[in-house]
Image: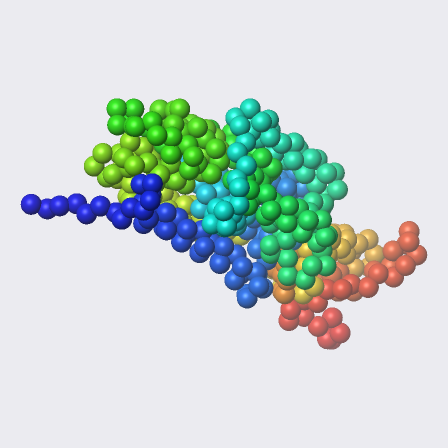
Length: 410
């Protein structure tokens, strides 16, 4: 007769395998961010889901992204929204590097026997409202300025800033304060201040995944509530529907009754699953949403800068260029300035500029009426000096088109 082997359990009923699996995922995601930033020189800001929230207004109204961000932010944000609808705020419990560091600092505080500070339910609810205030302040000033005005104060950016020239000392003050508080209080930033959490909470409240407590089996020991990093009173609930639940499974791990054959607490996905399979399915969904968002951003390259002029003609041609020194939105605006010129090199007819600004060589697509303009005229408009009559000033173009020499005879 076949037997089922139980997962090894630690003190207090903790399932060591499940706990270590979540820690492994957290470490892997943190290592991915740090390796991409410092070893590969990648712009990890373009994969920050909150960047999409900050950039949404400028892209919808002006057709361009705030500098240092890209349309990849929208794709990863869509993936996070999907995983939140399916798994509640599992992004916070498994993927977010700030959440990971905060949890690790909390574990370090317990190991060092630093006294923990318990926040009672009423103050906790009041403090939880602060993240909506933080979100409103950030979005208001960002939309007004059209720039990431709080970038120099962001603990996430303090983690991935390579040169320190675009970050203030306040970012390290904020990060140090959060780190110090995390030694005493369970994930304080995630619970009370994180603006992304404020965005995700309304969706998380209706998340399909939920923790369920079997009242017929539960011993009412309260260990599940004590183990919850975001202070959900699991021991008082039959079903956890709190928006702040991260599906971390700490409450399930802590339950002395959490055996595969007789669970007091379980994570319900599409149907009841064993503890180990619940976590495996959860991680699979997280990876599928993340990987799908990354793949979609490459398969569907949406321009991060779009400008149009005039009425679309019946016939439209498009030239595709590779342009150097088109690093961000400011340079893209300058490029459009040269295309919009009104001197000898003026480009008549319908114009639409689509660009993907970034380091190195940037892709640029220019649409035009072939009856009124041509590819050579567009290249000349981009690379020839422009005399600004109003400013009484010659403006020299900083752009270089790959494979095009403006001095070559034509």
